[in-house]
Image (spheres, rainbow, N blue to C red):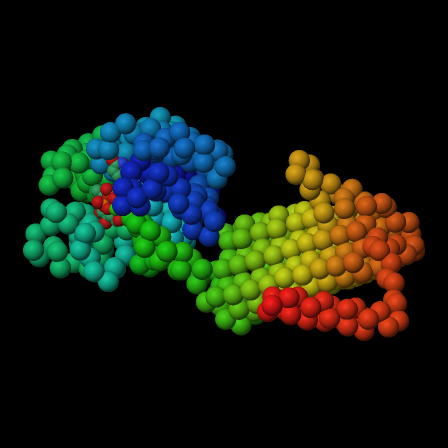
Length: 456
Ligand code: UD1
Ligand code: CA
């Protein structure tokens, strides 16, 4: 990789009014990660060594969020939105530290990929002073047009400042560029605001650098790389593109998706080869799946870890801390939270396992509930290896069932059960011969008597 140092300046001062949201636009998520964090990730993958986040609207919220997705980033507040060049200069202090490359990106353009950024940086390594990332949108209206001559970029003309002839150009400014660090501040300081919008345009540095005799070039990226998000419809569009990319990546890495368009990943989903995912599955944040698992239809999981060859669902709900070891099974309409289901254990039907350990090879019958909560505190249930819990049992935590313990169906277990013991926690059955018939006759004659009395 490129050995040069690099500062990424991410512009995120805009208000994003069209999102109609109390939250800053760039904090809206794609695949569970704020869109500006996607930009940070791309910058990191392109080898950035420093990060500067230019914020304005919702600065406090932005700073707080940045601590999570970019703890090393410096934040700079742009008090007034006077244009993209003005915004970059808000990070003057960081730029003046002397980086080889300065990458400028927008926080609302989340699908930019590292390759496009690296390609622009490569141009700087080859001697260019400025490398602009261009793209060809289906309709160029609204974008800055890239005006090239003999393989060099001579100007970027904003839509509002374009002549009729220039408006016909299809090659547009994606908004991102790489600028040689040694020239950056000098070029930016020369930018004026004599244009249709009265803003300090970052794009003006192209002509300024050209006038100094410096080399300026354009690279080309795909349309998706430049997709800017202004409203929630575009947010959903970006989500769809992200999901399509991720599904393809999963399939090419050996995961079978029977109906890929119905499976949703998070930005941090890990999923191993030979896993089969049936339709309509949701992988929320923090899911790690090893190899060979089968995830049946309509399962929903967050924060779960699934070891080799497990079977999950259909209609399983795995919540944070669900830890399924090799060959464990969690089946139909079961919910598992903050619990380990050890090797080969089976939790197959209509069960809630919370704050528990299900020992290796244990079998949990249909309708079993760990009663882990008294309204104030959570308590632990320990189920030993090879235990058998009969259907419709309630295990009132804190409680433990020893290895090989056997729980009769319908039990309410409030006291711990030793290894290999049988526990009943229910009334014993009593059978009285003939009593059913006698009752039926008694009830029938009582009903007839009432009917007769009502008629009189
Ligand atoms: C910009 C480019 C245009 C390009 C287009 C691609 C300029 C002058 N124009 O136009 O050539 O085709 O992006 O989408 O750069 N921002 C701030 N502070 C400011 C101004 C902007 O932080 O003072 C941020 C915004 O929040 C936004 C980004 O910079 O994320 C771009 O600003 P915007 O006003 O949307 O630029 P465009 O007119 O779209
Ligand atoms: Ca824009």
